[in-house]
Image (tube, rainbow, N blue to C red):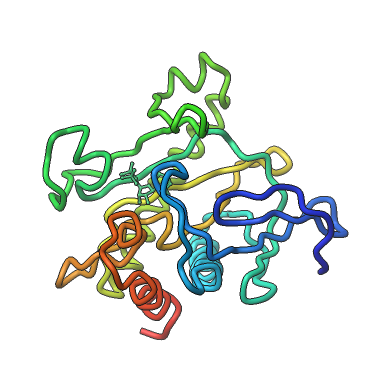
Length: 236
Ligand code: UDP
């Protein structure tokens, strides 16, 4: 499958058309941004790792009954995916206190939540992706009730499956962000699942093995991404 015209370029990926109007090619870049683009940089081979990790996790989720846009990995940096209309709601699932939740609730990072928290964010860079609830989604016509409920239920299911998968690899799934898109009337998991979009801590040392190393300038960013790739994609 060949790359045709560029359809869209985002912060971390480029979307290309293909011969098939139902399929796109996603190209994973090394560019890294944080704080809604205010911090810019590059993480060596991040695109290769995020493509590989996302492919592995989408395959694993498919085996567990979660449908996604993933069709196949084409090369180091390219993934073939179903073309979807991205829903403008980002779904965040949380298992431990970290990041914006710690700030909002005035708590320190690391506490385990009694049960997972699901949050919705309106995907709008100009507004800085504000947190919204189901009523905002419906009243402002951002998605239908059926779409948001389906995404919510899938996020909880992904959280259960992914938490267990990570724990088997000595990784705590602290929190993560999912995106969904509609394809022929069905809501599919979309985008990517990788150290850019998940907080992943070593189970024993609680060392951060994710994009927080870049955001917070903790050093050893590439090492952390490689370690996650090794644990997620390697044999147990
Ligand atoms: N996240 C993401 N993209 C975003 C915002 C958040 O992938 O635009 C992920 C982030 O990596 C973390 C989770 O969503 O795993 C929760 O992020 P949080 O709300 O704590 O925001 P942050 O602290 O990253 O600003």
